[in-house]
Length: 170
Image 1 (cartoon, rainbow, N blue to C red):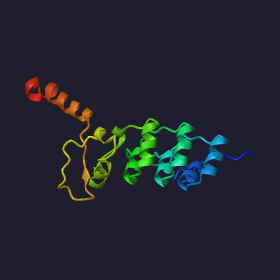
Image 2 (tube, one colour):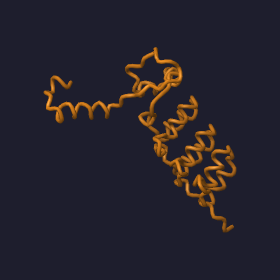
Image 3 (tube, rainbow, N blue to C red):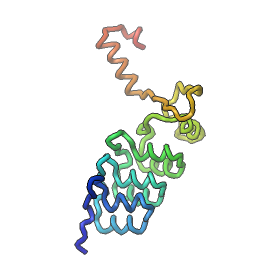
Image 4 (cartoon, rainbow, N blue to C red):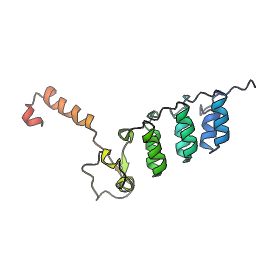
């Protein structure tokens, strides 16, 4: 009684909920949520308790936090989404759970070769933008993805900024 559930540690700005989620402690996570802990607080890197839970690989806690209202599409200051973390862990249960709860494959950032190979057998693989994946890229090097919005931006710059005719741009 009277505990301050949302106090943020200095300098990390992590809350008890961040620590419980990262520590794989579902009982404490449940108790904090039921006591009214704010699931929307971010640490100094812009990571939510959902980011912490996904990092720990604990599906039960991920589900608890999503049910409590955590945003599955929230990106950290460096552009990392919970889905991106699950993808890096190559955890099919985490990826499938996040996708079923509103996460979007488009929120996954640059990929490594091993990640693309791992995902190739998954039903959502076709949503990844790996059209021109170069298998000569050494393992561990990033593959930069070209999103449809980037293509549209480049097309607009070429057409409107450089005044190129549509036939040339397309």
